[in-house]
Image (cartoon, rainbow, N blue to C red):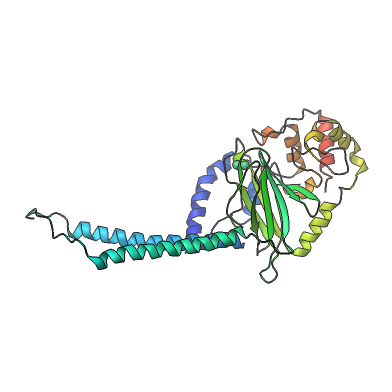
Length: 351
Ligand code: CUA
């Protein structure tokens, strides 16, 4: 049943997107995204998403049965008791004050509503999960126009747009708790296969949790209109077995290796406006307005999922981000050819 809906949904989505994809330069994103399973809410791999999914199917099933009974009786009455030639025009017999009937149509809906309230309350309780078990990972999510900042307070890591979390197996769960805040307008954090949407609001800390049971990459996006590039505020959650996650953490905690051959590119970076907005650990750059670039090349995408992270794309991006992402807040850097090449060569060493 679920697969059936999923197939129809994907067919409609693909049919709708195909002409657009054929026209636009997708900067290599189509190939990458096609290797990632569709981010369908019907295919949950984490407890909060699974709970919401189960509740939705339960409520839809009950309301469908009610709809079929009411619509069936209505249709039957309309057809069976329709006006016919030769009717005498009198009203049919009217029934008043039947206690059994009134009792039944009051009690049955009350019981149904009560069941829905209890099951919904239980789901809300599970999804909100107030207590953080020991061993849980905490990540601070900060939404910006139009990208995601991820800070791991216990680990001293800062990254952007691609969130790494450990796999949580059902025997020894290692869930991840996200505390979400916004630096500017209201956004919404949404990774359909892992959890429901959570609003990300300035001056208010919201929280949510995930416990992905299956390793892989999950696509997400901003779920609330937040300005020009709302549609290009994408994110990826990379779920890895614990050992791989620990290796990623250890690598992220190191500053990037110094490469003497790109000294000029590094000087270009440090002597332009780049340093006002970006951080690269081990350099003078400690800006907070844009993404932390310390380990830029470990990320698969740039511009919050607008392009694959290749040298050619980086060059286009640095020279004028608005070619890829109209409305992006990063200005065109207006560098000469040599400075641009050297700067990109330097960025390409940030592993
Ligand atoms: Cu951020 Cu929509």
